[in-house]
Image (cartoon, rainbow, N blue to C red):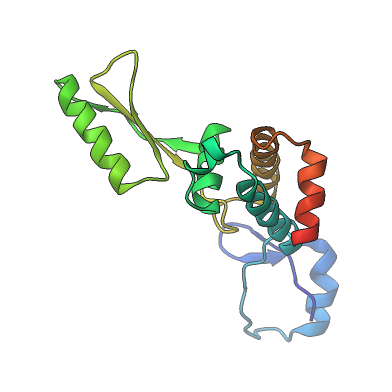
Length: 173
């Protein structure tokens, strides 16, 4: 049986018109079946993305390589850098020293997040967290755009064209 696409109509799931005939042939009235999640994002695109990121991470200039201990850390930094992040409500403390201590402690606990003292108001601690790119958290359109933004930035950091990064990732995938 092929996957069937449904639309929620407020109190039930209804097959889209192009799937009605197939449902009529496949199911008897009153029959029960599982409705399972299907994601429009291709596994090939997902795999290529991570292969390209691993390639970029492995080819970082030495001054940057020390900053990112693994490809996940690198990916999260790129997501934040390109705006694919959640910015928490700033912590506002009464003393600059307290803000510095808090920023240091949060950075220690959450090393892949971007946590810093606001240069315009050093009593504020800013906390940015990379958005999840899991299939459940990010749809196809946002994933494709975030993938493009992240890989463009990664190619820029290792000083290659995006096409060259994609080509090298294709060999690794």
